[in-house]
Amino acid sequence: MSGNDGRMLDRRMAIRLSAAAALVAGLFRTGTAWSETPAPDAPFATEIAPGVYAHKGHVALYNPGNEGDISNASFVVGRDSVAVIDTGGSARVGAHLHQAIRSVTQLPIRYVINTHMHPDHVFGNAAFEADQPAFVAHHKMARGLSARAERYIAVNKEAIGEEAFAGTKIVLPTLPVQETMKLDLGDREIVLEPQKTAHTDNDLIVRDSRTGTAFLGDLLFSEHVPTLDGSIVGWAAVLDTLSATPAQRVVPGHGPPSMAWPDAAKPIRHYIQILTDEIRVLLKDDRTLTDAVAVVGRSEKDAWQLFDDYHARNVSAAFAELEWE
Ligand SMILES: [Zn+2]
Image (cartoon, rainbow, N blue to C red; front, top):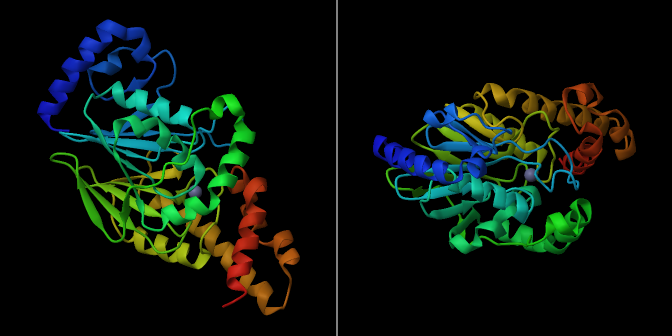
């Protein structure tokens, strides 16, 4: 944000703090004078660069305890408006994010950008409908999400329970991104870069030009084992191209709210390579999918959380793809 925005925000914050200190204090931490008011609980989002805020989701599957808060979500504040990048895994998580935004700015929320179709990144969209933003996503996202809508709703409602799921629904994009395009938040440019099939067939990279922050969605996992729902060969290629593109910091879809680039890509790129190499060796020997699931990538077991939940599925998906090479 510019100095002006900063002063305006500080004034607004001071007013709001005096009016509702208890309500606001727990929601936020920034690098400004606010941080002198210690938050009683962990803040929902952290200011990782000037005007850029990121929330870290739980490293977990959907469960009633986390209400679907299992992925990262971010927002960027410009001079005139706000862009949200991913909204969490339920309307309730989206509402927490909305509240966190309102604790730093009253500017209109003009854009809600989804990095891809997975429910833990899009189910909070409902909490932003009243703001009437443009819902922005890769041009293939609407098709993918529509095809899975019923299943996503049923499975995740079951996993977190009816109460935590209340208000959650599918909100499809209204602004599809076909090729690189820019959004203007007022003196602040957001660049959108749709990708070829990698984590999914609808991955969208978001960049804040002012701070050099790249929001990579699930093209980048840290801590949480990657989940493959697109193309393992495509994902490796996207990561290689991305790694050669500088960024001041990146926000992964799962993991810490801010990471150094390109170092952050190394563990996931290694995981992808191990799977690819080991499956190709087995295929050469005419071994089966069952063999592959039993042995491929076991050396990575201790490197990742949720390994037992997702790794076998990754091997199956990669095997099916590489079999046709
Ligand atoms: Zn995903």
